[in-house]
Length: 115
Image (cartoon, rainbow, N blue to C red):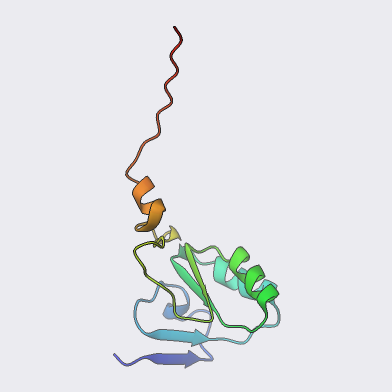
């Protein structure tokens, strides 16, 4: 379907409580950053989050506070071979791509030998 922007969506709406896949953006008003983080983090999903702001300090606070495997600031996100891709919570465990993806297939072993 066409890219869609939704506004004035009730908190009980399905799209507010499930992980949407597709070209959909939900825009909601908020009173402060703490409310944004609380509302975003209450969901059981954590694949990706997006924030748009000109305030670098605010962008850092939001990125640090979001419970998501990937956070994009002022863009739609990147999926490059050298960058990790993956979510947390009910959105998956671990990452693909990047060094993190390679390390997911490796096991560390410590060997100590005397004499």
